[in-house]
Amino acid sequence: MATRRVSDGAELGHAEKALRLDRWLWMVRLYKTRALAAAAVEAGKVQVGGLRVRAARSVGIGDALILDMAGRKVELEVLDIPLRRGPAPEARACYVESVASIANGVRWRESQQLAALARPRSVGRPDKKSRRELIRLARQQGAS
Image (cartoon, rainbow, N blue to C red):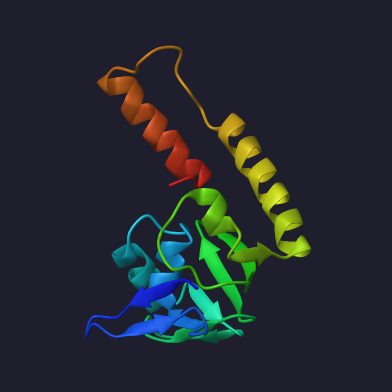
C-alpha cells in the first residue's frame, strides 16, 4: 500500500483522498509551480463545482474543476489524488477532461492560429522603426 508522509511524521494511507487545490493542480502538472497554481486560484481562474474557492480548499475524487487557462475554459473531473509530482502520464491519469471541453479546446486552438496568421510580420528581424510600426498596427487592430 502506498503511503504519504505528513510533516509531523505520521503516515497516511492511500485511503486519504483529499489534497489542497493548489497542490493538486501543481502535482498533476497543470501549473509549473505551486505558487503559480495558488495565484491562479486566488485570481478566480479556478472553480470547484462552479464556485470560486481558495487555494487551501481540499479537492477530492469526483470534484468538477473549471480552469481558465490563457482564455480557454478547461473542464476537468478529479479521478485520483497523486502521491507525488511524477511523470506526465502518471499526472494525466489523475483527471479527465470533458468531451465538450476538448471540442472547445480544438476550436480555441484554431482561432489562435487564424489570429496569428492575421498579425502583421516582417520578413526578417525588424529594425527600430519597423518594430514601432508593427506595434502601432497591432494596437489599432486590438491585438495588444
